[in-house]
Amino acid sequence: MHPLLFLENSYFPPQVTYGWFIVVLLTVLSFLATRNLQVYPGRLQNVMEVIIDGLQSLLMETMGENGKKFFPLIATLGLFILIGNLIGIIPGFESPTANINTNAAMALVVFFMTHIVGVSTHGIKYLKQFLGPVWWLIPLMMPIEIISHLSRPLSLTFRLFGNIAGEDIVLLVVLLLVPLLVPLPIMFLMIFTAVVQTLVFMLLAMMYIGGAMEEGH
Image (tube, rainbow, N blue to C red):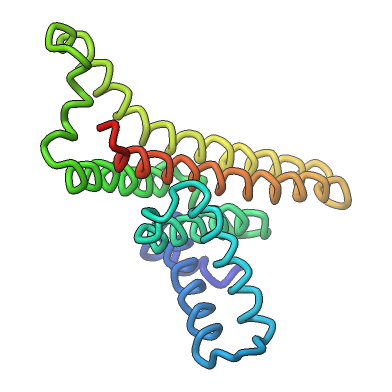
């Protein structure tokens, strides 16, 4: 029996329980890594610095200098999704990212941030992208653009949900049928997919937000 079972059964849905567990875990790790920063870092500080540097490099390559102010959002999403994906590999635990509600909440944050950034950067001119290049194309272009933008949070939500939920089901079935050595290759595949899906979510989020800042709008 894992330590979160009493919370899961008594108070909160599983995705909420594990989501808050990941938030607390990341908060504690961040505090421990930064409470006594050293020029020659210890193991925890070194690991955290490598992760943060990697995320920052990815953001700079994707969004450029203008993306620096979005680093807290992108890094938080990336770390939460990665830990959320990986925690389902531990027997008795569930991935909060295997629940559509968790993923929809993160996708909506990216969706609203994209348009908030677009309006704040370009003003009312940002809305011109929904109207098309000429006025007589508005009846055609507006529905297409609206559907295109509404499909973004749906894509982010269901891509992550489908991959992680599917992997959890496969692992459960394999563990029930062959509980010894056979699940090990499945677990390595799950780790790989967890990392890939984290990168995909982050890259799409950065592309959407970065696109809203481009002068083309």
